Image (cartoon, rainbow, N blue to C red; front, side):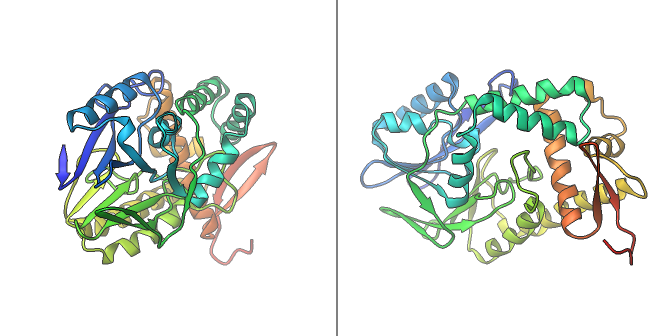
Length: 339
């Protein structure tokens, strides 16, 4: 679908059991047709269905993988850069992401499956996940890890950089939260904002805290702060990585910050006078949730989002961490109490 002159949104399938069972789930790859070939923004992950879909949809607009000159990634989660290695096989040497994403993914892919699995299992256990669910959460991480044809991007981006691809100019905005090195890309001539997983038209943002993050990482705080620079942009159309394009960016920005703050406050209220693990917070906050019937990816989503909010409250000085035999629990810091 052509969303602006020379700019196409190609929805490629995310269906990939055992991670995603929904045939309707899609990731958007944006194709910018330039004077010499094309540039891609994101890629989908490396599955047969995603590869075939991307090739077929590029052919429908008269392009092939050999026409790709540049690829830029909003961030380096598997469903966004999974086909990086495939593009290299077709001669694409210019592939770019933010410096923090490159550093993060370099470390992550230096670990063996056994090492990754141990880190994830230990982390899940430390946050109170019952033993019978640990293996499936470990497996889901490794499954996503394997849906990447790995290639380290050759170009390191920073906030304020401009990516030139005649006739397009993409200005780089560092928008951490969903990922430490997440970026949005602004095309001023067409007034487009490629916003990756930072924004969607309707759904709340997914702001996770992963097992590989350091103790000083604050995805929620980063996310709230990174909304502000986007308010000044003259945007007619926002182009997310999932879902349809949308207008009214300023209105959406005014809605989404308070939504994130509200969900964080709900986690704080759940802790109320108790000492709880992240898993206990999930179950108390969602009393009707049947955890055993959730898909593994849904379980992981609940966990990483809840820990992100607990981490923000901890760094904000509202919660403290209590360690007991490897178990991480949280409790409120009473006003006037020394830490």
